[in-house]
Image (cartoon, rainbow, N blue to C red; front, side, top):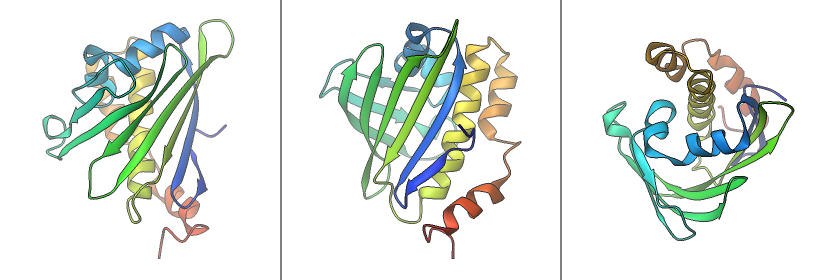
Length: 169
């Protein structure tokens, strides 16, 4: 397991992290607006297959909205939704399973990422997952913001990972 994630293919990224808490607690942080805003972006996920997904990146970084549709809603273990932020769409899947007492294995898989955006998504998910860990640990808002900014990430790691799939010139 690598905190940086790995490319399974040129358009499939997987992150696996062991998180503090129970599966039910982590599920709440993945699906509830009051928690999403802390580690990902302000937004809502309608709790059903076919439900609307909306993240307001403009409130965090001046970016555009990310929209989607819930494709899997299986609480508290599996969640998937489409991710439409650019001209092409992708899909994000979260899988949760117990990993010991008050520990949860999170498997995040992002599929069909647009060509040229894979390294950005890799870096972004790494930073967001650092922020999720900080939030689950009950750290301060400042610690979460610092983790979210990804200030400790060696961006060269993603360049090296991406070279084998032709993601880096």
